[in-house]
Length: 180
Image (cartoon, rainbow, N blue to C red; front, top):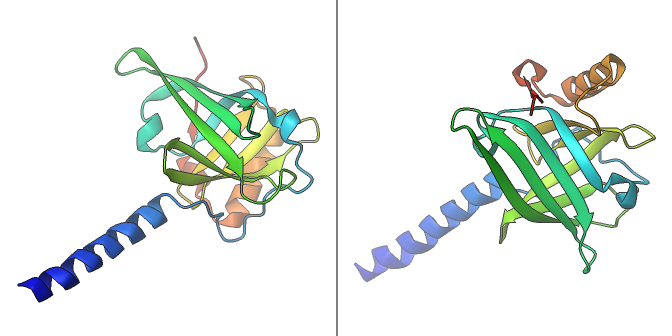
């Protein structure tokens, strides 16, 4: 029995670790490249979520915003807010993001539940930092962000084409309503 225990516990913990690693990785999808010469200070402030893939933390959410500000330790404070139109209530979650390499490479890791971190990769942004395409660590996570609730058609097409080239199924995007 002791031998079975000595094998079963490490194998179970290893398998659990692999599941967590693949679910919450700080990687970047194959074929995606983070923005170089990224200006973190210009990225700070409020962003409106224009589109996303559905996943459990944002299920049934509209009016979603993300607010980024600099912490005193150099990390980035992240506050996501959205309206759950089924439960008819506002939800807010605060977390922290940090750069994986240096601040000019738009590869970050974000955590709302430490010590679990997930990839946050800005893979396209316009020169004025008004519109951004953000990839998670896998093809399950994608966001289109804007400084306003509207996205010009030219940016929509640019981001959709880029996402498709990487391998995202953009037909699955949810276009977020902003009415409150």
